[in-house]
Length: 125
Image: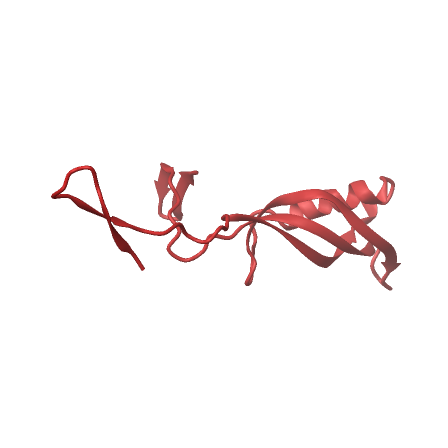
């Protein structure tokens, strides 16, 4: 809904749009997931191994009804590891925060087109 607002010139009227609701296109989301630590990473500290595997799994992935994951945010809370028969890795229940790109409908993003290929556009925000 918009209203007319009187400008400095008497013959000029400019539509006034109220401010959109306060929201941002980048949000922090908490997730719970099971992360598999492969055998070659078991010599490292558990938290380091979990962060390494999360950095491989989540960035540049779209999670349904959440958005596009940019990166992991902060330290994760890691549960006890479980060994599965026939698998050399350890499976840990992880509670972590992710930085997610989630614009709302009709939100305008200002950027510069860096490249255009048949796969899509690359835009800097």
